[in-house]
Image (cartoon, rainbow, N blue to C red; front, top):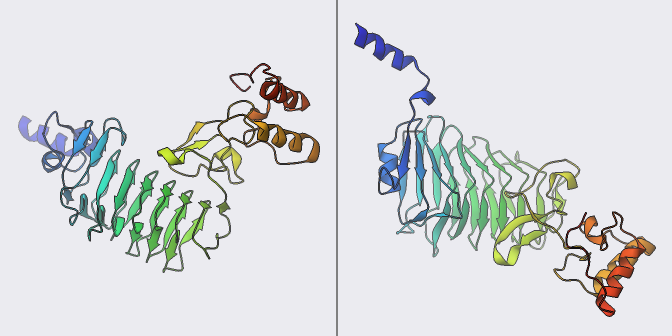
Length: 338
């Protein structure tokens, strides 16, 4: 009787109380072995490393994540004709994939990097994708794609096929031929889409596209209403740093909707005196500042950068400070802007 009562109590407990964390490579040598051992509600936690695997997840909703994020954990499938991650859930709720740097191979393979087939939301978040492929994430079900980074010359970063209202929110797409190809109603919001020939292809007619930032799109692309056309001011586009400059329109305090746009937050600011945020201080900064102060020109990208003498105000004294520094070996602008 006592054994039966214990069993009944265990069955009554919430799944979260019974869930386990499976460590890779601590408990299992490969990620797939960890997935095979997991049951719905478990977390497979992957340590740093370079993993050459194909991952298949079927009929179980688990959290597949990493200890330290995509900068330390890479997944590269050995055969580019097979998805790196293949998810087939049906109507099981609670699947998440996060924290991986996924390389999809560097050829025109037929398989997507991640394939999702599900009638409920599969959360794909906090990952970094870099690949050549027909598509990065192919969703034949319902997906919630949030705060991922997509870079590379892939054809379609995200392809959504089924009419189950997926959502693509706060991602950063750079150098993708097409960021999103949609055959179904969906929500595309708060994304950065930069250097994309065709940013969005929508065949559904019911997709919500708003509060995104577009930059350097292909000829003929018209930015939809309630979106931004502007340079996102990334900290280091050429070296792969997709964090935002403090003056970017993607920062919540710098746009009319008060929302964060893109996958990453603020990561850099202009040096004091670098009024045009060019990365060095020169005569162009003096010209920029004089035009702003006397001729009604544009303010410095980061208004604090105009305060070269750290007086707490941007005025003619800052222009004099810069001229003295550039031409007469005067004191350098202060090290930290107020």
